[in-house]
Length: 85
Image (cartoon, rainbow, N blue to C red; front, side):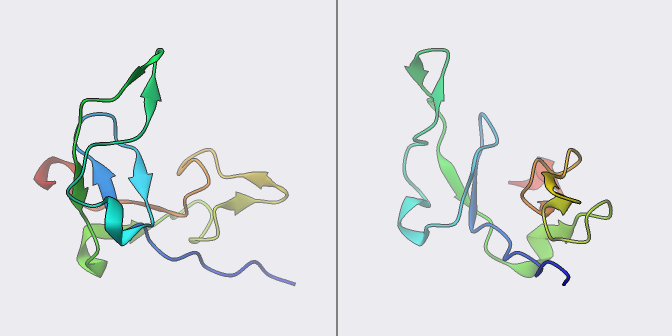
């Protein structure tokens, strides 16, 4: 049985790069905890298909065998143009 391709994230933090799949988190302060303090970044919208490219290492499944893909950190996607967010 092959793993299904994951949905791409809907937003990404402009400071730490954390991703979210929740629409309501876009445009708000990032909720990621970094070194004991909350990240100061804002989650930018990245919901368009053109914002993301499928991971070539895992094919978008987020897995390599039974472990998370090391290239995409288990997300299955990477930002197509990270500098444009």
